[in-house]
Length: 220
Image (cartoon, rainbow, N blue to C red; front, side):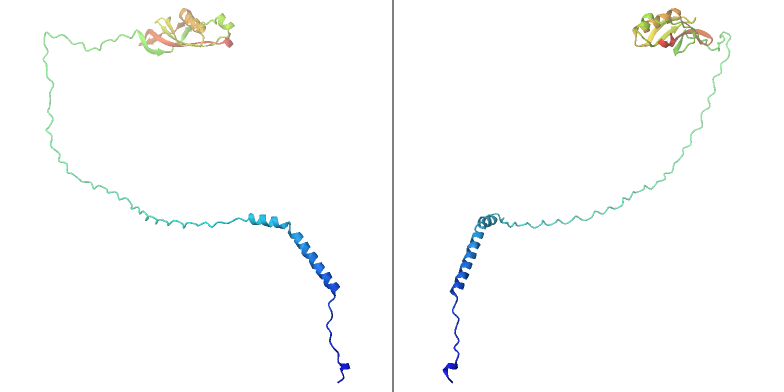
């Protein structure tokens, strides 16, 4: 077979321009990557420092529970009822009561007759306690000074009235709050008032009476 007909396979030669361009591109990419990662280095260090170290804590096992005491059983209270005991009662025979007869006295010729009439009790000279008596006359004059000062009130008096109905003593039991009105009421009752006397067993007697004396400006 002739040598001219044989084809020899040849390898292609690398393109130096293309290889240089690829090398330059790789170099630029590496430079860009390094430049981009430089600001992140302190941040990565700060993140690493801020990582908390978790400590492992040992948890104690729960204490053992004490066994519960047994339930208390309440037994019903049994009340013992006493049994009545019958004791026979022996009645003793009492002796018959003795019969007493009043002594008899024979009338004597020298004996004086016994007065069996009840004693006569004299009526009291003054009625007990304090009573209320009717008025026969009760004139009342309002003091001029009290009118000018606008004084008014009620005086409660204790008046001793004799058998004729005339006051013989007057005491102030409760004041009106004004000494002028108290004095005027006492003097007027003692000098000019008249009462119906108290009567006991049909007899007029002295008696204490409670007398209110009112001084009112509206009644003028």
